[in-house]
Amino acid sequence: MALVGTCELCGRALCIACAVPMRGRLIGPECLSTILEDVPAPQPPTRSVHPSGDRLALAGFALVVVLSAFPWSRFGDSSRYFGAWSLHWSLFAAVAGLGGLAAALIGRYRSIDPRVETAAYASFAVVVAVAAVLHYRRPPLLSDSTIWPLLAVVGAGLAMAGAAVKLLGVLSVRRFPG
Image (cartoon, rainbow, N blue to C red; front, side):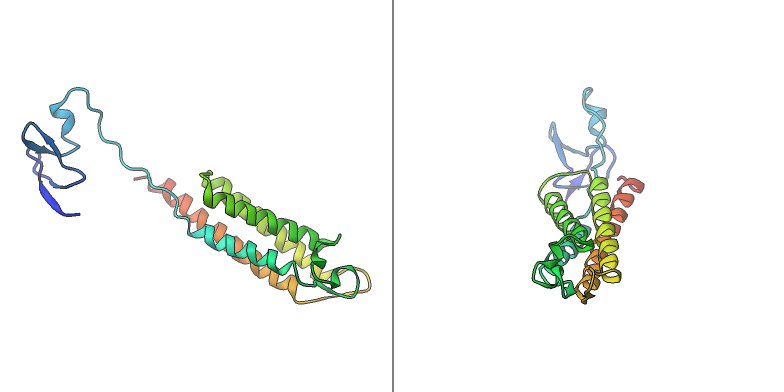
């Protein structure tokens, strides 16, 4: 910010946002209460949580949803396109991926408590990872797993990394509020 003058009471440098013209003099916001009786002391601005974790979680959950369109098994019900949506462990992974994607999109366009967003990202990511691993390790009867469940675990890892970044942002705002 560009310097526009100094406070005539304390001598502190003032920018255009801080300078308050008062009776022909420049006064800083901290010194205003000494001149006026009913001016409250200035409040420090509140910091918001940076949305960088949101993008990472959104990408991870979107990857899981896209991967649910591919066959997660060879032979049987889940061997066709969108076979991950058949009744098996893959269904839990696909639904949790869709839920996480919805949570990331809602959090992106609506003001939600960042702690709730972080918990939602982490919960959905854990469900995706556990269900995808279970599907890979225990495919439907008389079938073999493909690589897609393991790639869904990668998407869950991205979403969990987004939750971790979001959590670090929440903790830094709480630790250093000003």
